[in-house]
Image (tube, rainbow, N blue to C red; front, side, top):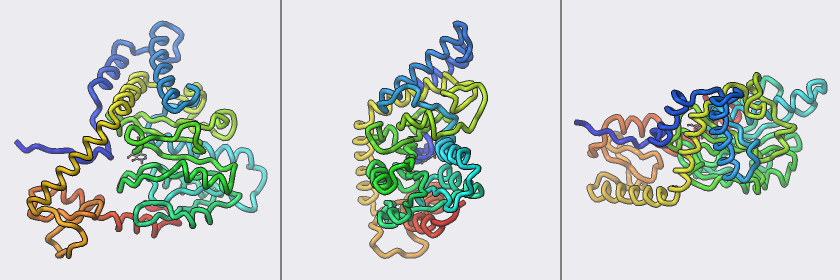
Length: 355
Ligand SMILES: Cc1ncc(COP(=O)(O)O)c(C=O)c1O
């Protein structure tokens, strides 16, 4: 029987057994509405409270600063729209001579980049910050783009395509040294559970997370409001209704998914160092084995058209002799092609939406 090996954990992960168990428990046995004032409701509400406390402890915040959302994409939308709608609601009567500005890196996930550009019809000036060949922010251009009109900067912590790790705490400090009142948001969806994410001590104001990247369930994210002042002024809800999630995200919460996110996070954080070491060992083993079998050559070697394929990082090339399935080749070729092509595409379209 053909054995498929899944090499795409950046796109999603399977839900771990412990998380699955709690989802089942809260879907069937403890199915109460967490807003109900009876024992079933109290049980569901207690589970959400416990998860909120858990994340508050990790991020060094008060529990109210944890806002559970329907996905990482929704957390990003809440951050960008929430900040802009609040600004627009306060300045509706003044026509601004110089429009407020949002800066996003050119390689943001579409849930940030597309969302930012969808705000331009409201009179917001959207600018993309170019990145270099390593997927790092070009600092000089970044500084030039920060003006007194800059309302929001959104730069992700880890890129979902090429894996570059961006020093967001440092970048937030640099941005605020030039424009102290701007809000700094970071999408930590690919970072959480793998590298240290910003805490309240940093200059980062908002952090987005998603559960399904760390063996939690799909359809659950969180926006961590590190800057507590934003709970009182500066962030407007997107979804209105019963006032759940401190009024920032109405809609009956799913205690099973929220508890499952807590369980998956506990697991990911406690195993973080061990998994990092294990992944490194596996990577070394894979590269060494492919090289030994002469299935892998360094990308600086001459590329003969049609016979060899670039790996996503373009440090290595997998030869066609390898018995990697055609699906995998397609995966490398179509989705990621090469790091440089991806970066060029993002940077080329840096003044407009790339989708
Ligand atoms: C960097 C990044 N941000 C945001 C998202 C969106 O998260 P979700 O799938 O929970 O909407 C993803 C998912 O691929 C991602 O990789």
